[in-house]
Length: 137
Image 1 (tube, rainbow, N blue to C red):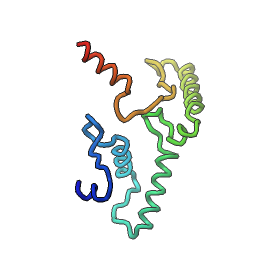
Image 2 (tube, rainbow, N blue to C red; image 1 turned 30 degrees about the horizontal axis):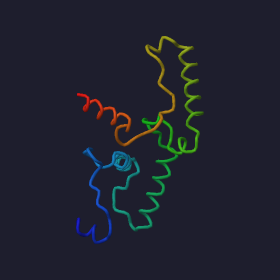
Image 3 (cartoon, one colour; image 1 turned 180 degrees about the horizontal axis):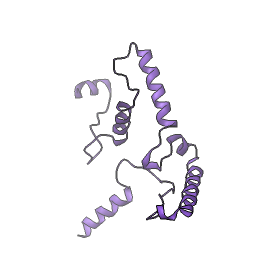
Image 4 (tube, rainbow, N blue to C red; image 1 turned 180 degrees about the vertical axis):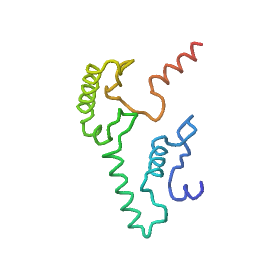
């Protein structure tokens, strides 16, 4: 396989450095895809049918599916700048609910602040800090 990749001019990449699984975002995508209720039970009848199914899935994945890592907003909401307003409205709803029924809340409400950057690996600043701590000893 390596020879074929080299012959085709493809630079092989087996995984990210120091990370055991190749791409966490792709792995999450495929897991979500496989466990959707409408995942086909039989092979697609044609390439066109497969493309149509994937197009519908990708539309749902980006515009309807809410991700816990980004505070239950869709990638489209985040990408197009709707995230902060949505999260502010959710925060207000939770605050009103807590004011009406404080007995239902033993702790603070859910954190509805925007999630900030999402990374595949550790933050570069954390990695540098860890390296510096090792160096100092």
